Image (cartoon, rainbow, N blue to C red; front, side):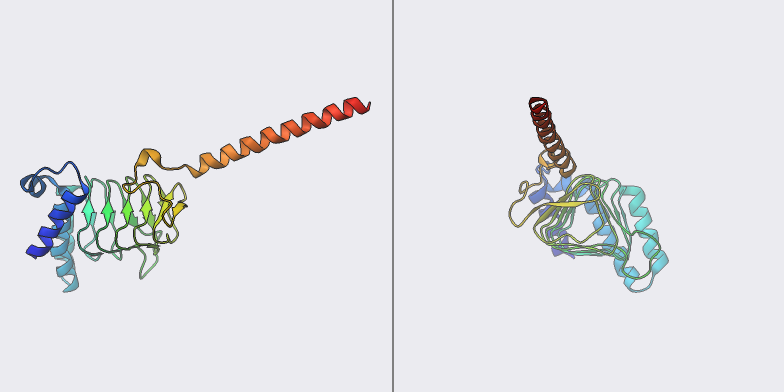
Length: 217
């Protein structure tokens, strides 16, 4: 238990430049408090103490603003930055060294039974307000851009942005090692720019055809 607590604190220092000292991290990081409460609730849930497990998760939600279902499976060194509004569903599986920002939802798409929430592989990063929905897999070291809605599997070492989420970077051609949100490419804007360019080319061709018709007459 103490090894896990130590590694959780180290993960905060590794991924949050605002962290100054251990006391601050222990007392002021709601993501840590929610994670530790979840570990207790998850153990109770596995022993089929469902009501008590849910009660602990709800108390944690009231205190931290982070809702983690006690059935969710979470690996080592999860870092939830700020965390307000984060929701993690019952059948979610999260690997090691995953980072979640505020407002992230790892949820389902309806009332389906069985595995209905995402699987997040090691090292993935899911940015502010992103929604990852359904029984899909987010590959290792994948990055989900702020505000994206992801409904399909994401390969490892990929960057996804947009609604619905589209892969815009893969296999080393990524936006940046820290996912600078202000530098994310916009696939919709790129498509509109291509359309404008094609329309301009068509106008030039039409003008040339008109000139030829006039000269022939």
